[in-house]
Length: 137
Image: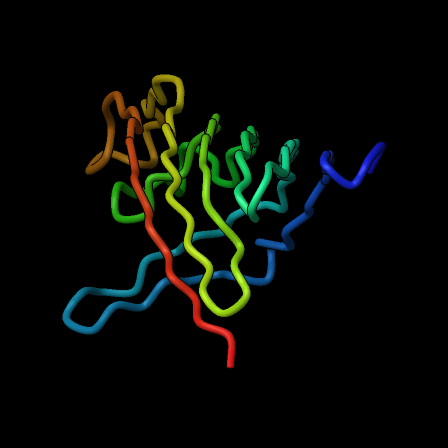
């Protein structure tokens, strides 16, 4: 934090997906995942304003964790780019925040001969909006 009015964050997360071998959903047969470990690369900035208000922006990149052979549209894994903007207020008793994100990934072409039921082209695009309220007692 260069000053109390600014907060900068950079982070790298590693997830050990190799410990997750199968996905079981009631009423659906067990799906082999066989994912590999992957990284998230994250960066964000927050500017604190007067009267408890703040604005934030961030970006993260999530590496794909599955090969074509074990790809499933039920868990559509791909490289993801996520950008977010938000603002809010931290009060004495009440907090609130409003944020928007755009989540997008490049086309994922699955043409492995071992994955015939899911061969094709996939892309993830998901705009989101979130609102939260907190009360401190």
